[in-house]
Image (cartoon, rainbow, N blue to C red):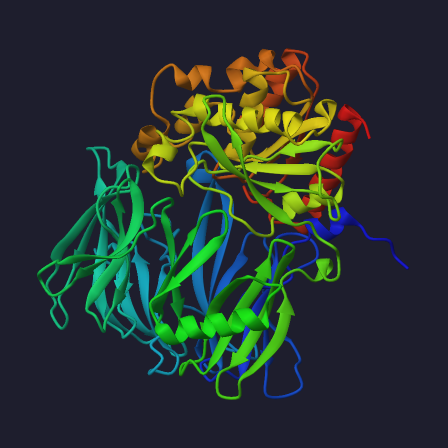
Length: 638
């Protein structure tokens, strides 16, 4: 019998992603990873016969990868593929691009739906557009945003993002919205009508974007555009529309109330009457919950110490309550997709100690059918429970966090410990399964994930100026998480480490700069190491002004960056980074490793060639887990 390999089991990419159900509810499609590399395969499976998965489309990850697939008819799907490559025209800096393709459920008739770049186009086609509306009443036809490039050779002057009604089989199309150069998004009402358009504001004469978006809307049945709102993505001010409810003739979106993000509806009848839909007194309201082929908004999610959903549709709420009783071990339950008549619903249910199971619920037959597990490699493996806790920061502020202990342990006393700050920093951890925290718990560590000040999700007062400009508060909270683990949870102070990814990697390194006595080892994955350089990486990109607003200017760029303060780190450091990282340039880790070596700080940089920020490769993740575990045991003891 083969012994259990934790690194292989936890490091493997999810075995199923993007499960969807056909309009008639008789077939499913899902994406599964290949064993090595970033490739993936699209499978389809009939549900009214002996289940047999059929591989219909594959992307090898060099560079194309599968992102998501949706049924556009009972026999055809549309998929978004994306990739990252080094661009010769941009000094071989990594750039990402997307394309949308359509394919039959048996693998035939593959066609590209995105516009094709002509030989004489003046620009490079990066964005492939997106499907806005599945048009369930029109078999295989979709409403889709598409990018157009100017072409001097043919005389085509149109450029920017427009909307076409497109037959996915014949590729015959009709123009719905003329391309606009500064258009970045269109929102449909789920019935084939474009009701909202987003125009990116240009901040200066150099064409730099400043994070401000102008939203326009049109009245039902009209063609002209009217002002809806101005939204600042940095300050989160103004109304941010995300969906249209055609029955109420309103835009659903977010606006701050008492410093926290709340859900509002704004009338699209010309009055712009605004009404509160839902607000929470302690946390930001999260994402809308959609259901069905028409992308119908039925609820909204939010997270306190646990995740919750408020449903607008009483029938869906009643169904959720009923299914929750049938699946008591899987309290995290979401409706993921539905047949066109919503008689068959696709459900994803999981918990902190269950990565998730997909089910199909037949509302007519009142039958719940298990389909697939999200992570097959962890089926039957005892996993750790995740406890919401609070710990005091140095100024007395209570910091929310999640504590994961090894399976079967009720106390952290005497255990080695890990503080694991999340990335972002404009993000937060939520209760549930986390493959990285669960791996370290399986290896015997007590893992604490703090939602330090600078995290999003708790309103403006908690967000401060963000984790970069208010780095001292954020990193102070992270250090206090380590101190609490020792003082209150009684973890072994000689075996306390910090592990972080992206901003979490930055926080791990900067915590070792501020107080080298707390953590005995640092693991930083794709970390920001120098704020000034992180901003300069965007110098020739349209979003430089936006990044300048986020990171800011001043003394904090030097004082709050690990790179110029590398000599203050006194403990061993292990770095991981992919060379195709667009979020945080690989040079951030390369220079950090060199600075630590110059300061005689023990350091190793593990480089993943041709991988990006997510290191979305099972073999690379397995290597990273094994290397991390060995590093911690070598530096802190078994």
